[in-house]
Length: 196
Image (cartoon, rainbow, N blue to C red):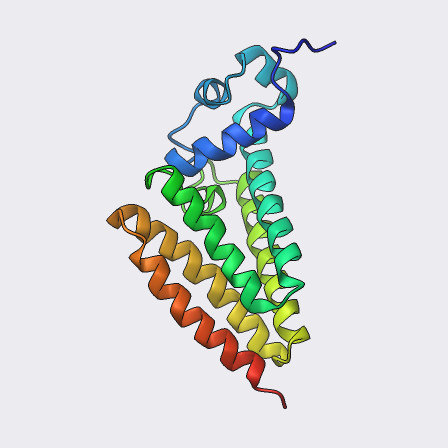
């Protein structure tokens, strides 16, 4: 049914995640999201009949799932390799985009919803953060951290890295992420070393 020039749903979602990571959600129209994904507007509405909010929600879920997959794979070796993979992923995105792209999950999270209802994209962002924190917390516990400390450190990792990404973009420097990385490694080493 679809010709070779028709973009896949996945490509539209990935393109939307990239554009949201650069501009945010409210400043981006569905027409711009389609254009960025090199997709006809008609194809975009075919895959996302509910429009921009449906596409944005899928884009956030895509980003969240992609990061979770990397974390799952790397956390098998322990919390430090997982942290390093998390940092490396974001470093690559920020540098490859010349400081124009960050995290689409964060981008959706910091914008004021346009209505009084919580948008599905914001709920998807919260789910992504929860998943990343749970994966980190589970790895920390599996490597010796007590449950309360593991949960706190996992939250610290996600919040610190997300904040550092924003700072890197603002400063056009990777220094904030480098400094955060050093501190987080120390915190993780302390947490897994506290067996009790």
